[in-house]
Amino acid sequence: MLGKSREEAEKNLKSVRGGKKVSLFFKNETQKPIKVFWIDCQGKRKKYRGVQPGQSRQQGTFEGHVWLIADSTDKALEVYVAGKTDSEVVIK
Image 1 (cartoon, helix red, strand yellow):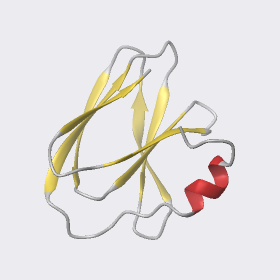
Image 2 (tube, helix red, strand yellow):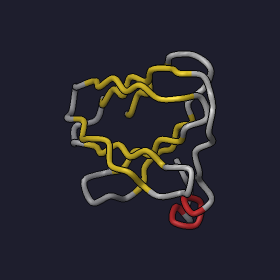
Image 3 (cartoon, helix red, strand yellow):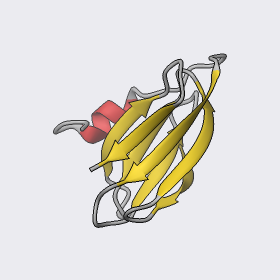
Image 4 (cartoon, one colour):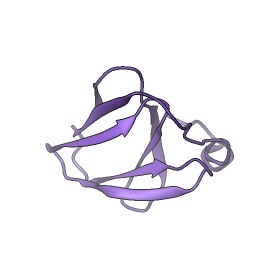
């Protein structure tokens, strides 16, 4: 979670360039749809896609890229930074 000041924390998020290519698997274990955004190198949200309850989505990305998980109103719920290996991002 981003804590009380989600908006402030999000202002400091930026993806870094030039990492290793990896895959992320976003898995929605909640009862509500979620939205997944990539945070670009300038700190701006770029909408990836929605993930329905019970669904998983694969996304190719690069090490150091920042991904933000939001609810249906675009309120930030979680942040994930891609590591050096393929990873599953489970939203509960």
